[in-house]
Length: 232
Ligand code: BEZ
Image (cartoon, rainbow, N blue to C red; front, side, top):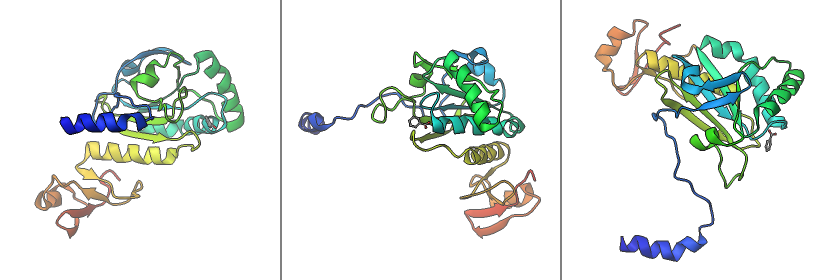
């Protein structure tokens, strides 16, 4: 305690970065909220229903990288639907701004944006999900993305800077991996892609794995065992 106090008084004047206590972690329940969106007023948990969800923030409407990101999301609508996943975007702009911007997204990205964009001018959602990182920008949301499971727990958190558009193929890849490991006792190796061999979960003994995975188990090490993707 004494050392802590000495360090605090010695060093605190030099710490100029703003800090926040709010932080969500994997496995936490995704906080619920009600909000106005481009498709009407929603209750987040009700809107997700029993499926998967993706909530992602962008810094601002009428900005170039964001325009491509929301266009890409619209382009992948069928892929998200196949995975029983609803997508919601959010920024601190209001719904009327989002609605006019959608015209530009549709025009320039050749899409038809149908997923909701949340109007968060009061920063309710941005604060709940810690999407404003004051040392990056005082006012704009960073590019945060949360994958939420049917149990409403957070399964993935990624944060990109304003200058880098996200890789939505990677988002789908993680979703596939999460859905696979939710259904089978498997994990996915580095750079895994749909259709490639997966890893037998550490919780399963090799003896049980051989019975469980009828397509076969390749034992490289007692802790590193592969099996063909079970649902292919
Ligand atoms: C963009 O979407 O292009 C962008 C938004 C905010 C800051 C920088 C870039």
